[in-house]
Amino acid sequence: MSSEGDLFQSLTDEDKDLFNSYKEAIGLRIHETFPEIPANSDLKPISIRQQLGCGTFYTYKVVLPGDQMIDIGFHLGGRRATPLVGPPHFEITKSN
Image (cartoon, rainbow, N blue to C red; front, side, top):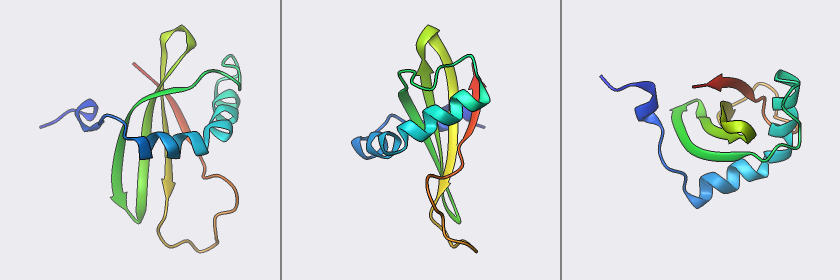
């Protein structure tokens, strides 16, 4: 059985572009979740996990200043009852 860490892959240019397209909104959400982390922190994604469902669920592992590690998860695509307006909802969790 593989561990959760084994499911993360190296980033492609497309993965980096997707992350960068939401970088400002992600920074704000990180600051809302963890106020001690500035909203303008230098966010460095290092790996990604993608899971297909109704759309695609993305989880990025991101290194913050001070060697803190967080996971940022969000969902894109699929059929929605109401159209998505603005960036997706980002789930932010600290990881080891």
